Structures are given as C-alpha cells and as structure tokens.
Amino acid sequence: MMMVLWVLSVLTIMAGGFAVSTRRALDQSQSALAASEGQALADGAINYAMYMLSHPDPRQRWEGDGRPYAVRFPTGEVRVRVNDETGRLDLNVIQEATLRSFLTRALRDVDLATRLTDAILDWRDQDAIKRLHGAEIEDYRAAGKNPRPQNRPFAAPEELAGVLGMTPAIAKRLAPYFTIWSGQDGLNPYRATEEMLRLVFADDENQVAQLLQLRSLPPGEQRPQLSLTQPPDIKFTQTQDAAYRITAEVISAGEQTAAVEAVIRRGGSRGGGPFAFAVWRPIMAAKLPDEENLGMRPERRRLP
Image 1: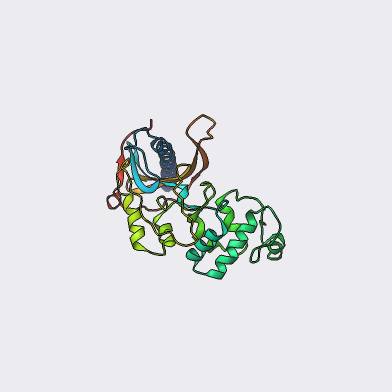
Image 2 (image 1 turned 90 degrees about the vertical axis):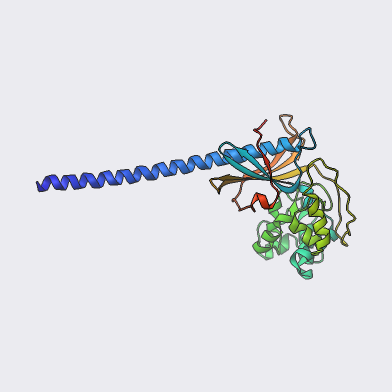
C-alpha cells in the first residue's frame, strides 16, 4: 500500500509539472503569435500610410505634419504619425550659421554649440583641415575615440553620436531634430514638431500656436501662409514631400504590442512604386495621448 501511495504521489507531481510546463509553452506561443500579429499590423499600416500620402483625392490624402491617424483593423488598431523630413535639419546640407544657432538653442551653451558645430562640419567635409574649434583624426586618436571622422557626408543620423564632444546624453537629446533625407538647407516650420518649433521660436507661444492650429484643419483645405517672424540665423524653407518618417504603434486590448518606424523617399523604388525605403525598423512602443484629445482621424479602410 505504501508503495502504491508513493507511486501515485510521484505520478501526481510529474503530472503537475507537465501541466505547468505545457501552460508556459502555450503562453510563450501565444505571446509570440501576438507579437507576430502586431508586427504584421504595424507593417501593414506603414504601407497604408504610403498609399494615403499619394491618395488621388486631396481631401483624403494624409498630411505630413505629425498629426495622429487611427487605422482600425479587425484584429486591432494602429496609431500612425507621418512627419515630413523637412521638419528636421539635414546634417549633410545645413550651413554653419543655422547649425550653430540651433545647437545654441537646443543645448543652451554657446561654447558647447560652437565646438560641436565645428566638429560636425569637420566630420562631413572632405579635407583633413581642422576648424578652429573642430576635430580631425589626430584629435579623435588622442581622445581614444572610435569611430573617427569619415570626411564624407553622414551615412545615417546615428553617426552624430560619434562626433567628438558628443556625449550619449547630448546625442539622445539632439536625435529628434536631425535627418539626412530632406536634402534641404533649412527647416520647414509647417512640418516641424511642436518641440522643434518651441526651440526655433524660443518659446514664442503665439507663432507656435498659429502653426499648430493649421494641423487641425481638414486635409485638402487651403492653408493660409502665416506671417512668421523668422529667427536670426535659422533658415526657413517651404519645400516638402520628398521624404517622410512614419511611425506605427499597434494597440490591442488597450496595450501597445508592436511599433515600427520607417523613412520613405519619393521615387527610386525598384518596383516602380512612388516611394523607396531608406529605413524600416522596429522601435520601442511609447504611449501616445488619447485620440479624443488630439482629434485623431479614424481610418477604417483596408489596405488597397
């Protein structure tokens, strides 16, 4: 009898362990499935945004000013933002005066802004001549810093972190303001983010409010040209529609399950499409404000 009881106890423990193991495996499979579904939804929303940016009806066409859109699928919702890259400063085209002036505003340190400006220009120029406050290969070698200046245009915005004097904290602070895909010397204030506008206009709430107000107008409606007071040494441009940054965040059961960021450029697609991809990468999902507080426009169409 004791032997039977021991055997039953062992079998019960084994059965319990098997059940727990099976449950864990099932949970992992469901988690992987949810992640795959979320990634597919985000990818689909990126493609849908590309279509909406070229929609033949201007009243339906999406704007590249950062306003949020909600794309609802049967299996979840994707929140999408489209930002024209001219709302950022192009590291490869920006001129010295604009770069120094912007860095001074962003970092609130004239000396640091001057050093970084010269170091950035030394990184992208093709010569080995050191600017007054800049840095060339010998300076990087002395600082034990790698990579060293490439003496060519920036190949990616992330290379900014390699510039001498650029700490990780500073690079993270500046990352949202720079691009390499606009091809424009200057900034389009009609496409810049609110944070960028506040830096450029030095917290001039009136001008910032006017620009943000335009983003509440329906697509296709004529937008008035504002009488903006252009800050000294910050060049403005109204060129747009060459490159866009699209972020898509998947919302399922009230939680964000996946997020993707893509940078697309007009033309150059091998398949003859209107856009070519410059960047496509998963990102850490960050909570977006509630759509009712932002006037988010729901889109219930399926992908064309």
